[in-house]
Image (cartoon, rainbow, N blue to C red; front, side, top):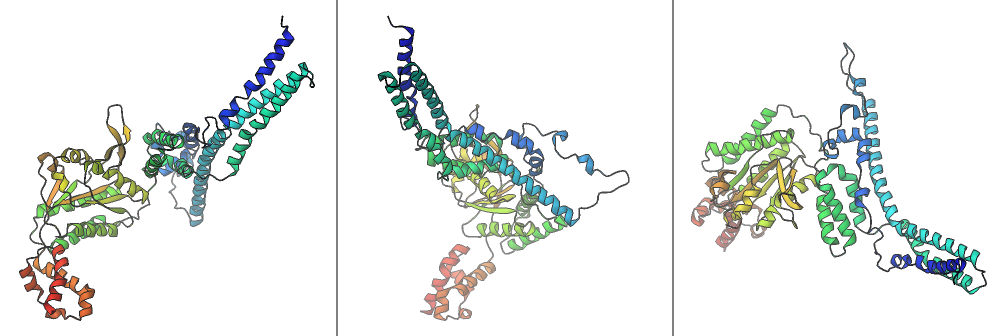
Length: 515
């Protein structure tokens, strides 16, 4: 009958190889090539305590409402505002240049400390993940060492069992050192996976990105780490989503003196532009002016409720619709410098317009580009919009042009419980849609301020023809005297009534006359 001592020997001899089974999983037996494949992104990007610590900075940046479930109470702000209240009979005194410099340096130091805290949180999560195999290996190694020591106490070292136990312990310990050494190498070598830079971007800009997108972004990071086949798609998504910094502070605008007068001056420029066109009904001209002034006021005051409507320009091709929108944007830029981004869009199908789970729509793309450019608003021009009258596009157009220019709904980030897309607040946009024909669908037509764009006057067309001819290299090489060419007669004969036809026909007409 086996006594207790012999049973202990047998158990210890079986325990040593059993403890080493983990080394195969850690040394390629089902392990991941990416050392960060098992990273816990929820913990890596859990910046709640950091946001609380830098609550004053969150308030100053204007993203406190985003990062906190509720606005911080006054007593949670680090600065005691009572210190800055004037005593009885005193008035506020402006800061001197030295005081402003000290305040600016303090703000920059606080911002730098916040960024360092966010990156430190991410680095800690990375180190913990990279060293996970090492911790498991060291635990197993300590158990094997304990078992070998116990066995050596029970069996003589020169016995068969004792020799086998020591050999097994040394053999397995040698293999277990690989998952201990490898994490150290991974920590020393600079990261090469492009996901690392995206992770750092999210860590630094998370407070500016809408909170409802945080779990979706974390999920995409996890999928990119664990599924090589999905990594490229996930990285494209992350690159796009990290640009949606809706709560990032916008450039401070200079105070505009005499705003009302400046708006009137802009209206005069619009009038001057259309003086070169055939008769333009005043009520349609006012639709343009009204939406422009609403857009300007919304740029200056983002809380303004009265947003501009969508503007639909319809009329013959080549009569200056695109030129007008570009000219109008320049005038707005003169009034409010560095505030507006121009976006020219081409749409051919419903997915390009509305977007899907695999593709951002037109408006979401405009929003992202505007935020990446750090602009306060966008002027959007969608030309050749014949798709508004296509039966397969009407329903989509109604959903996109729904009259609510304060929010955008998208399924690109997934759908809610009710099946609807995620809604995002959007900055001011002045949206022009242009086509040759009127909108046929009555319900869709009511979403727009429709403008019947007039034809240019004959004098304007002649002026444009002379400009094209004077800039032609072919005409200059032939030394043709343009004074001898009858532009008015040519215009009547050619029946060209738009800028596009003139641009394509005038130079050949002049060259053929010389021959």
